[in-house]
Image (tube, rainbow, N blue to C red):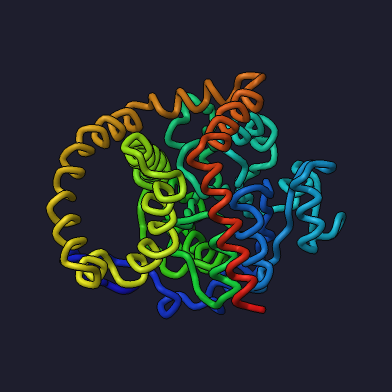
Length: 353
């Protein structure tokens, strides 16, 4: 374990120096890791563990797009690719990487295979934290652990292939074996984490739901729409409004902020941009603080979980979702974005040629 100063606050984290891959392999050498679900997180985690040398199998419904994707990724039916039930039966560590709605639907089935001594693994605290709504209550004779990569399964895989790692949180909800803490860390190293920081299931899901509804997606989408609308209403063309709102953000600023920090970004732009950003950031912060506090309260009260479960379990949810996404996709803003991306692609091809 390493103690690292994060902005003046010391935190204890686990890095590959303290818990190298070989130690993780040794710790899990007798385990069969069954990855249930091959959608968002499943492929990245399963492939990374397989490439790292762990004994991994995948459980998925045959005939689904996810089954076909697993076949393309080299999982072999009857050897490393099974039905959900057979994989859960064979697995000693069962990684429940289905969607939250999928986890609720599968729980009565999956429960039968969680025999004493097994481990139930999550990458999201939703099902356990809101078990009064999900019904996911594990028996006391199994370990229940969590490793939550801080990004998509696609990013996890891409960074792993490039020799890097995506930071992850880890947590222990139930330690029946007395070894659940080490098991969680070994799994975190196995899936390709950069470093691991400890949390609990409740804090993981509270921060995750707040983040995705806030800065990561909800707030970002909302403020993009607002700025684009203001520029268009004030007479700017779609191309100009999009480039000033989205293209510069995604193609220039965000990568640089990720690499160097916001202070570096402020220090490496024009004086006009510096003053404008520094003078206005407080106004945006003060305007959004009440909204984000309301959001956190909604998460903590269980209202967000309730809304998610209720909406996601309606028979026609997929059709309703597609209608919502179509409205976004067909908007002038994102139609303009599609054209800009196409032009960007042509430019890249021209440069490479």
